[in-house]
Length: 347
Image 1 (cartoon, rainbow, N blue to C red):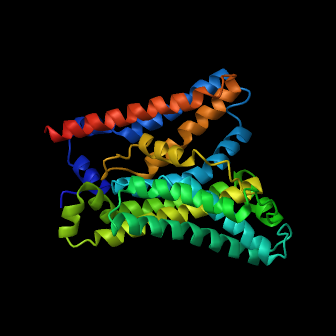
Image 2 (image 1 turned 60 degrees about the vertical axis):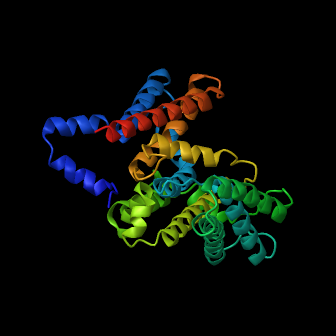
């Protein structure tokens, strides 16, 4: 099968000379994205040594990036299959709304004092709400053969509209205090935010699944050549439904994490999350053409806009420059990816 996986790349690199290995390493998009992130951190630390390189700023960056990281992890699977999901930001909002309303209903109208039983039900509802939209997207893409761009653009509007219908456009603010204090603002070992630990655990599990399991190998194979994967015995339609369902589940988890952090639903606060997730994944080296990508790269990509945002604020730069900078880096990343693909094709 003409699929390219990280395992096969590693095997090839081990057989190369040290010079060849260094050349491949230098061409790694993940490496270069990591260097850009390090350079940004050094720059802003030099500009504001009293504010940027502090424990409080690090904790804030990690907590704010945690929900976006969940969206980016799911988006990595989708883009590796040569698909796209524009609906994750709206699915996040929808999952947060149905979770908050469920906890509110189980608590008699005010979930502020709700216990962990109610919170557990709220988490399950958030995950199921996200999964429902993911399965719908997957069925329309894989079975109905509607282009993923159109399907998920439709889900983007439908999920957000459903959330607004359920709440009449008014945020639900009675979130359990135990959830807010434990996951929203709580820490472990007095330093690491619990929300970050949860995001790290899910990310490690997703990385293991993508890079070491049959599910991950099939994901790469479909993105490299869907027809070849089908002829090799892979149920492509079923796998695509599973990938979009996974992305929906992670968007639901992100909605629950956002609920814990802000202590309220944020119906109007995630309009750019879908584009930020796509940008993070592409910046991390995942090819929009499919078949190539890593979870590690997506993790690095998530923190570039987060660091830019925090650094610009601390340096006194107008925040409107942040999307311009991210957009410029994103276009450069896609251009470099196209050059690498043309170079491989000409060999």
